[in-house]
Image (cartoon, rainbow, N blue to C red):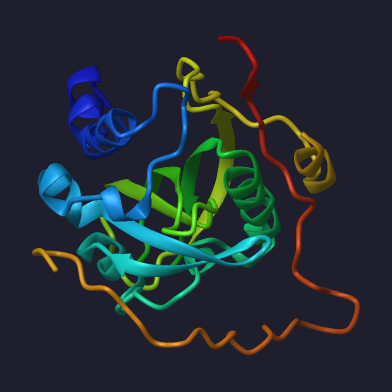
Length: 231
């Protein structure tokens, strides 16, 4: 991928990030959900989404851009964000979500889609940014997901290749080229075109069935975490 093509593909992430940063308080206070005006990110609406925390490590999508719907082959509004992630990596996402809501950190993920019949090579970049509710608690978020490659047969779920984080007023940390082993416990320590809001109650999906006895189909969690404490 050429540098120009990469910049073009990541343009929606940069647009939403710049808009969100423009709403930050002088002391880095997280913006309110009510401050988000879709007209400010109109060119990125297709890839954007808004979510609400419904459990310590789980967020439900309230507003979903059309690109997410195309990836999953259904309307993602009302679904958990973790639906986009392969089951074996959802604990990693949940731990990162806890850091986003508890510490107000920005979260960036590099993703690789599962492949198979009718599902060709597909990569993705996701940005998650915290928001405050009208009550002042950090329980909302705005996010962006862009992909590179053909969507093919749906649904397309993603493995997490790497995760990086930073505080709102810190400089961006470069996404790592390759992940290094790290456990989930390690991480825990440390109405406009293209969008439609969902207001239905969340109902957890049925538990996933496993294979033969003793085989859960899970792999040891892995990711690379970057947390910068520099000003």
